[in-house]
Image (cartoon, rainbow, N blue to C red; front, side):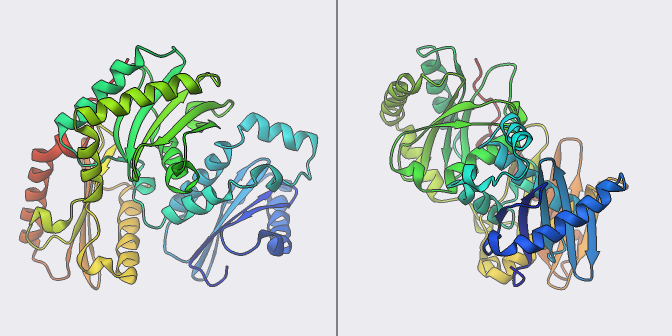
Amino acid sequence: WLRHNKHFFILSSAGKPVWSRYGDETQLSSLMGVVQAIISFFIDSEDTIRVINACHHKFVFLLKDPLYYVAVSRTGESDVQLKEQLCYLHNQILSVLTSVQLTKIFEQRVNYDLRRLLGGTEIFLDSIATLFNNDSSFMLSGLQCLRLSRSVRDQAGTILREGKSKISKSLLYAMIVADGKLVTLLRPKKHSLHPSDLHLLFNMLTGSTTFHTAESWTPLCLPKFNSRGFLYAYICYIDEKTTIVVISTDKSTFFEISEWKTNMVESLKKENILPAITEASSKSYTMEDIQIPSLLHFMYKSKVHIQFTTPELSGIYLNESDKRRLYGLYYHLHERMHHRARPLKLYFVNSVKELLLGWITSSFELYVVFPANTPKPTIISSSNQLLRWIKKNDDNLFILNAPVF
């Protein structure tokens, strides 16, 4: 694990290894014992260890008794960003074991080996740890929606809402997801789903091929919704990339939901909605489609809708080292602008190969990337041109009117 730029591991408060991003956690048991001793030293002093800076490395700790989470990084990410990632790892475990179950297990046996209960779900921890490096959803705390014609999206939402009236009242949420991006979401009028809960759900869909082969019915805890209990998720791939997900409070509604799904797929095909979704998910837009002078890449978040859009990487960013550099610059820009002590509305970064501009208002966050030495008038005019393009296309970039019941 020492060869990697970033590593995560999880241990119990008794020092028992639970999970390691790289390597065999059993072989790291002596290291985890040392970590547990350091944490205990601070606890005994009525203090809490948060971070250790050691030359190029940063050690960040998150204590969620009975589990301890540790990040070791030399990527340049801030303490806050790494701690957020540790929170996601904690929530990923809670999605399998509720907070009540977790606490009860360790109250009964403080030395319990949690790997017995997590067996088979480590793949989701591995998957989400990988996504931290190449998915902006976690950094922006937002949802990325599939770019899709508004009329098609609205039709899909209508089919979900009309089908809801034919099944039991236990249904909480129903959604269509394509290639890890949200197409539409049906929800109760007074309840929205927290983005981090949806991130965990999407990670479950993309992190394993288990759900591709058949209809699945699985207990699932959504920590932001209710960390103390399970909901039940119906998951079915209706083509290679498109999934229908239905979340219910009643564990006995599988067959009812399955029948509803069959009728819904028929309607989606009959109205030519499914082919439109399939086509949209197979060709994401790139910077070449937008044609804005000098602009290399961007991320835009609508603060009103808690959704963001960003083009597929293209050009020089298809190269892995250039891609890592780009994400590193985005992380730096985002961290500096959201710094708790001194947040910024505008921030300009001049690096060796790129210029970056961050711009935050009450309604949006914009992060744009230009080649080094781009004149400032060009940066300003191209950024404004981009905002006009987003405004013109916002009805296909974002879900503006999600169906409710």
